[in-house]
Length: 293
Image: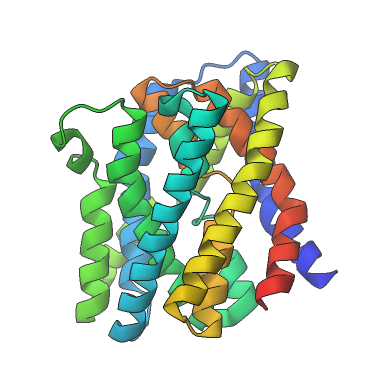
């Protein structure tokens, strides 16, 4: 019961902020998605990731093992979801990336902190960083429909993640005034993403939720199963194992909608997946927590 209530407390702000965007559009106010998306993806989110990684405390050996396990887990999820997309004859540009990547930031990080304390939060930031690197390289390649590899590495989040990992390993720290400024900018990221999601939800029709229900359920099974298998294969210690499963099994990432909007995929379809999978997580995450604790 306590876990269920805590998950609800974590998920509730997601819907409240999305409702702000939903109401904003329904009231007829202007909302320039292209500008807001650029601000979030090019400035706010890179600052959020860099500061989170830089301020994490973890042993280098644990960092390496969990990083490899994270890459392996997402690779297995990618293979299985690619098969799902092929069997269902779904549009790869629209559906494959959202089915692979999870909401490891605004859901995974606080959930890991509640379940395992500061140690768990440190592990969760590593998985978050791994997910970010893959999503903003391979994920962008999927959503953009291919193209030049330069298009992938031009995303500010990629160097921000790699630089944050370097600062973590080397135990470096930016001057306090700069850290405060970057942290303040990064705090914009999650509200921007969620409000923009609400704008997309305002444009959805009732029929748009039929397909996402099935896909969201399959995503939970594939993601949790893949992370469990990889965690056992790598022999991760209990906290690292639990965090890996929790992070990979979180709902569809909100950033998937922003990437779809930016690169011309079906953003409304992705928004439906985000909303349905997040609603579903109120039931699925407590079950997963009971398994890994």
